[in-house]
Amino acid sequence: MDKIIIHGGKKLKGEVVISGSKNSTLPILFATLLSDEPSIIKNVPSLADIDTTVKFLNFIGKKTVKKGNIVRTYSSCKYKHIAPYDLVRKMRASVLIMGPLLARLNRVDVSLPGGCTIGARPIDIHLDAFKKLGAEIFVKGGYIKALAKGGLKGAVINLKFPSVGATENILLSAVLAKGRTTVVNVAKEPEVEDLVNVLNKMGAKVNGAGTEKIIIDGVDNLRGFTHEVIPDRIEAATYMIAAAITKGEIVLKNVVPKHVETIISKLKKSGLFIKENETTIRVKWVRGLNPQNIKTETYPGFPTDVQAQWMALMCLLKGHSKEEETIFENRFMHIAELQRFGANIKINSRVASIIGVDKFSGAPVMVSDLRAGAALVLAGLAAEGETVVSRVYHLDRGYELLEKKLKKLGADIKRVHV
Ligand code: EPZ
Image 1 (cartoon, rainbow, N blue to C red):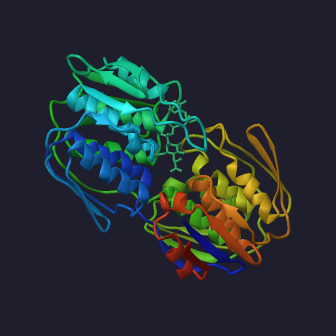
Image 2 (cartoon, protein in one colour):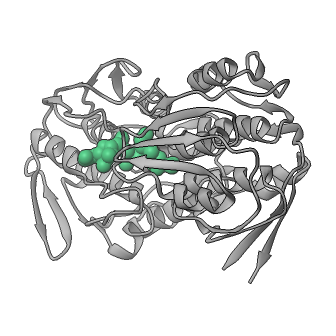
């Protein structure tokens, strides 16, 4: 089990290249199952979740090879229709196997994914949508069995919540359904738009990405594609906060400022100097920042995946602030660990109230989930003394070359294998 050791107090300075988006790459990899032609996906981050998905695709019957930051898929042989527990339990996004296999095989058996630390993570919205598209769904022996006798048929689907995964699963199935599917109250995240761009490159007919309503006209088959994945906006937000919390200056390269405009405006309001152009964002600490309240929302609101990192920063700013988590029911696991640094935070249901403290003292801390881990690393970078972060495998799921990138920015950080 690796650990990360940080000696904090160093101002981070320099340039960091933001990697491709994990949450865009995953649905795009599953989209390759929709065609028997080869595809090439570029700017793919080297992360545990990507490796898990590559293994998954090969298991299902789609030959997939990752070399550096490029993934190539080859023409498929007969797909298996069963997604076993030992693959699904490793990564919740495995549920995205349902859309493509229902579309191609009219059937799929997928192990119930189980919850995770940030919540129960049900998939009822996914399953209701598949029923509307003509699939029968039942649960047997820990597996969800979906069967679409006669194939999927277009439908009107009103989502009770703009679920990112459910929107992606509908897209990954309705593109090959018979007729038109209209989906209302869809997720508007950039990762959904990136998936739609790929599907349309494959010959699908999808309109309305980024708006409340998406219209999909089913086609008979789809071709291979070449695509470069968008930059990871959550990684970008994490490095912007790293500049703020260490009172440094960082230039982020290979970013889409529009995708992080909510973070940019909050940080500017707090007093950080930020200058953005086409593909870079320069972030410079110039004076003491003032705390800003946040409430997590679906895109383009403040992202839930940045809530923990934001909290680490708020803990060290003079004054009070509040954070309301509206997306997940249990996404405050980082608070107990931040309190080990000396943070002053109180929780009342889904609202955390933070009173800024003068400093953090380094401490041994444990990562509970990917973004909580990022918050603990940020806290360690700002803390006086040594911080030892354990269970860093959570971080390896979502942050490519984390210690290398931070070390290059001047952090005193190293990974030890214990
Ligand atoms: C995606 O998860 C992301 N993962 C998450 O990022 C992100 O936090 C989340 O969207 C919200 O933006 C990937 O893209 C791989 P949801 P997803 O379906 O699709 C409830 C990270 O750190 N819900 O939009 O699972 C659900 O319980 C990860 O990279 C239902 O109730 O998110 C949650 O409370 C963490 N029923 C809320 O909706 C459903 O059928 C948002 O979930 C589906 C979801």
